[in-house]
Length: 465
Image 1 (cartoon, rainbow, N blue to C red):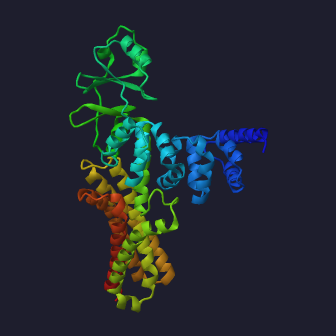
Image 2 (cartoon, rainbow, N blue to C red; image 1 turned 135 degrees about the vertical axis):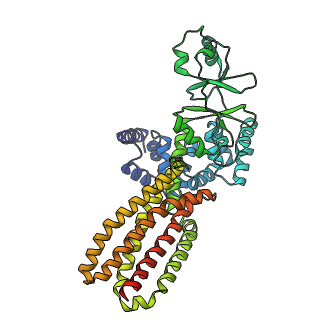
Image 3 (cartoon, rainbow, N blue to C red; image 1 turned 60 degrees about the vertical axis):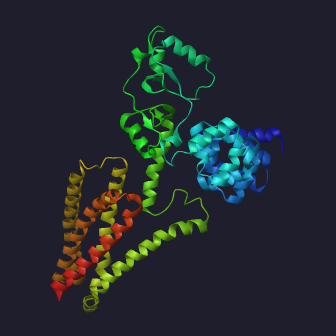
């Protein structure tokens, strides 16, 4: 194919990419056709104008075989940022095709925090192979960062710190920034430290640029500085950034000395990751579930389904206690699932709000009783309203006033307890040191099913027979 045609297709791809954010379906189709036709030049021409995040999205969507072919085609001009944007399961495939040396070269060009993000999801053997290919100084940085606990601030930090003493002037600081070649690629704030590298304040770049050269840094710095401990959980770090509107914060070791910084762009990823993780855990799946193979996906979902099977058996045992009652009136078997389903849905609403509120620290011991009372009230009011609706419907269906009364009472009790359980179960799990996003849903299902069936059949036995 001529260079002119490739250039035209490249321009078309650029136009397509710029029309809307992300990679379009049309461009994805063109890339797949070029891959199937083994048209290396066309693939390169279509990929060149794309952002690394869009290329990563495309790599995630295609099959493992197509992925390997695609990476081989772009290997020579592979953008290191793709490794940061891509999900974990696809990342292993990409690094496998690139090889240890090429992967090490790519990771070596990344900022420290991005490089750690790429490395931490590899196996220990995979990490060691790539570390051996890195320059000594970069390898030491990686090993130090990877020594911090997983999901801690130490894994997020960038070791390049822009730091000046408080006795410097604005002019000295500006001259230092212009002459220093080893500054971070992007930074928004300069930190001020004492001789022991302990942070004493911070100055925004805008304040420096708007001040005269003779002004002392200590006169324009803010002493209200939020510091992050290296072993702090990343979810706690995200809360601090969100709570106080930070753009960056120094990370300190056990002695209080600065060892790096965390910037808001790193925290945006953490906030998204934590929110997504909580929602997916409620459903018993992982964030890479859509991209992994069928065998791995099956095995990851199996334990969750086993847990639900156990809860279903427990509910069945409760039903079995009222077997004679059900035999006398078949309508009970028809109406039972309605009560249980309503309880499950009401509990899911409550538990979703509660788990998210715990994660964002909106639910604490200070306001817990108020929230519990609110959920009780909501559950009670919904129970009364739906009791009226279901009572009328069941009477219209079966013409039995007693059955309608039983149905209404069971609806009130079930929705009341569903709302209460949806709040207390996650809070109780937190007290026990268990992640509420993992276990809440299973426990809630057990409670609502047992209560729904037990109350409905229990009252039916007392009132109807």
